[in-house]
Length: 279
Length: 272
Image: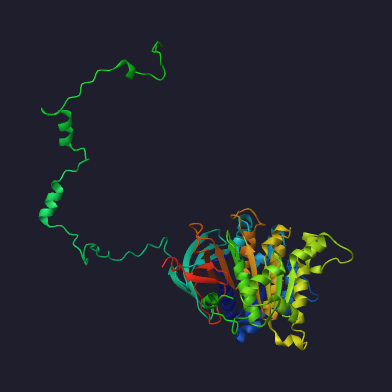
């Protein structure tokens, strides 16, 4: 399963190469790439075991002679196609991509076809590439449900690396989940570089020495000890310190006193202007 | 054609990778300046260009290209440029006058459910003619298809699936078989909606999977700025020939009267 951020096609091709190296016969149904581009990197003595059914040039039958169309995606036709070119040994079927088929075939028919192929016997294993961000979650979920292993790829921290989240369902019902970082080399071999960290901590390293901003200036911003003392002793004019408070509350002998007698005109109540309400 | 963009993409009219599908996209911004760039780029590279212009008239493109130093009228006369003016063609279909029923290309307007097969047939016929072996067509280089823009087809009732099929077939014919290039513009203004299968965002994702290079134009996240019109993110989707994954690049740009300038983030001449 891939997304626009990282394409899973190279990984798919490395699975194909690995299968060919294991002397299996591989049937490749390609919708998204031309046959030449698919064969790129898959040349070698085992190439004759690779049969490519290219649905790239005409997948919908718009021209007169399509090689393989999406309408041929059903269990009978595919089994027939496989039996035409293969011998008795079971075959690995690789599909690029499942998303293409899902755009034209209803999900229920698609899942049924995959299930029929699985149970059919002509196909030993099916490997498919699905673009997870092109479909609704429900459809992606249904397809993943059918699969025994799901590998979701995403770009890794570094340029060449990629992350893979692997979910494997074994026959006994046990589900294994794993996360790994891998790199695909030019010869399509996959090198697993270990587990990915849950959250990559930002490399802080040794703390940098605090830069002294007052250094290297053409003017002096530093304070000498005497100056620092004087600065600390200074009381600021608008800070309401304890001394100021007592000075104001207990007015000194020479300070003036304010005498106030409330005047009737000052006692104006907005809610009771005539002062006759019994509030 | 903008020389700075050429150096960012590492191409020039004399040497550019063939078989590329370049996807231009924009969100709350206007990427049509890139269409003008590629139009003048490929005309200068002496390629046969098939331009499906759905949103503007011929005179609009002609005026802008004049400022970039390329004459569309001349190219059309010489046969280098095939111009499908979507606005005019659609009028002749929607309001049929006399016997002239319009070219078959815009048949999807009659019934959007038919899909874009007729449009593909039109493109394919125009593009294949250049490789038919006729004497005068041999002077042109590989064929190029330019589409401005695809999201307008969605508003005309065509489904996302049909547009993706159309671009697939065009890619198979033009990029793969004829080793030409394709440039398509998709505009998505709405926010992405998870459940919506027919939104431009969904189309954009599908096309991004098919493309080899995407240029995503967005407005600045901080809002409007007079000196910086937006940012462009350049992503190479497929591995380059030497097998290395090229890093994605992010640039800011400003569109002028006669071109556009691209610069790394924070290095606009207004700021420095």
